Structure formats: C-alpha cells, structure tokens
Length: 114
Image 1 (cartoon, one colour):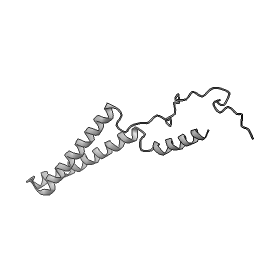
Image 2 (tube, helix red, strand yellow):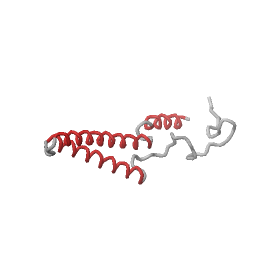
Image 3 (tube, helix red, strand yellow):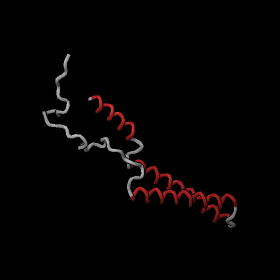
Image 4 (cartoon, helix red, strand yellow):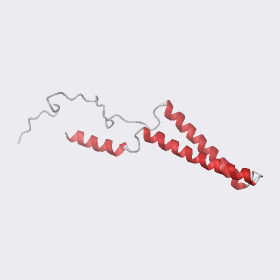
C-alpha cells in the first residue's frame, strides 16, 4: 500500500513550520542555568545553604557560649538551609528541566514517527 499523504500539512491544509512551535514541549533545549537570573538564584541558594550549615555546625560544636543564643542560631541556620534548598528547587522547576524531560522525549518520539 502506497501512502501518498502529505504529512507536512496541518489539520485544514495549513503548512507546519518546523521550529516555530509555541508549545513548551518544542525541541529547543532548556539548560538548567541558562540565564543570569537563574545563576544569581543558584548562587544565593548556595550561600544560604552554606550559611545555614555553618550556623548549625557552630551551634552543635558549642562554640557559641550562651545556650539560648545557640538555640536561636540553630533554628535560624535550619530555616536558612531549608530556604536555600527550596530556592534551588523552585529555580530548577521554573525552568521546566525536571518535570518536562520525559514529556519532551515523548513528544520528540511522536513527532519523529509522524
């Protein structure tokens, strides 16, 4: 059987323009740290995590003498670490690099079959 269908035609005969997709699942790759804004966010998150871990280490090792002040800094360090991890997750998820990889691969396979 000979297939003479023109697969470059759209639904109503309109032409598909390759690379002109407005879909978030287009073939363009989205790097994790592609812009200056994301680099700043990753740097800020890294500093928050480092600061939080330093405060926790100083509190646990007992280098801060008043116990109540050490407890307060321990809580501040924990919150700082959590905020840094959340900032890294939020920056990565907003780029679509975590959730969209499988969907992009599925759409590439479907488009290559068509």
